[in-house]
Amino acid sequence: QKLGIALVGLGQYSEGQLGPALKDTDHCYLAGIVTGTPAKIDKWRRSYDIPEGNVYNYENFDTIADNPDIDIVYVVLPNAMHAEYTIRALQAGKHVICEKPMAVTVEDCDRMIAAAKEAGKLLSIGYRLHFEPHNIEMMRFGQEKRMGAITHIMAENGMNGTEGWRLDKALAGGGPLMDVGIYCVQAARYTTGMEPIAVTAEEGTKTDPETFKEVEESLTWQMEFPGGVTALCKTSYSESMNLLRAEAEHGWAKLEPAYPYSGIQGETSEGEMDCEGVNQQALQMDDFAIAIKENRPTPVPGEMGRQDVKILQAIYKAMETGQRVEV
Ligand code: NAD
Image (cartoon, rainbow, N blue to C red):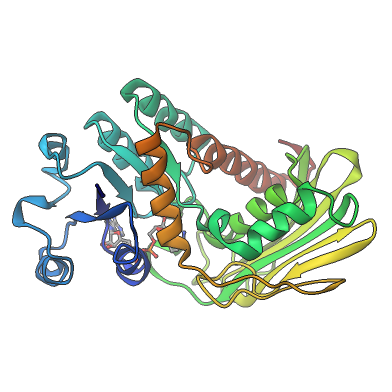
């Protein structure tokens, strides 16, 4: 039997990716929606055949506790709202998938993890690339030392232009680092299979200080891993870039683009990577549903999200102080 998912926040990612992916899943389906915008309700109800009783707003959200159709709540709101809605959903007795970044502070992550423990429910972060074959190949390349130990990582993720809450520090928690730079932190961690010891960072010059009055426009940072392994990373809201490259003792591997929803391309020093394209979000949500059914942990748990937020905070501290900051 398929588990029912309720999406909280019907913005671009829900509408463009998660909703459609839930038509491709075998172990879960879109059972409900939570929205503050009544005008969106009709279209979503018609597209996904959602009964009226499974439509919630932010005020009556907690009564979702009484709805047996909803097994999983998926929080797809601006970053600073993740903690509140994740905790409320867990307290309502639901399993939760929360989008990245997990929260805007480590303290919020701790409260979310504690709420999941308290409720005895699973908490997962929307790290779709853990289910994507090229990125899985990079994990193997590094962690299984396919061409020897990793010596250096380059990771870049940026786009040209953004708007709305992503420029608002209170809602986003920061600029492109919180939004897309987090993929580089993730990539460096899953390619090396190690945790960074310390970071240094330098904010890029603001070419548009008016737009970027609250958050960084671009940022370059370095992560130091055990054994002298380093990662050099870049993120930006004014430059498109999308790269993951790993240097190893006897060769290299590269994804470019590395992080999009589709069209990822991979190559190693021995030739092209032969990986298939998949529906990442469908695989990610199905894996979570199976984890619940089988009573096993999720490979992308709250603890993984917390570690990223901890690293992001260290990077911002390094950026602000100009100092090397231990993680
Ligand atoms: P969006 O702006 O398109 O949607 C945000 C939704 O939140 C909207 O429906 C909006 O109405 C609602 N909302 C509720 N309260 C709000 C408030 N106070 N201010 C602004 N909006 C409010 O954003 P999105 O691109 O869908 O991103 C949502 C979350 O999903 C973010 O945390 C983002 O990092 C994450 N995301 C993840 C991926 C991924 O690949 N995993 C991709 C895109 C977005």
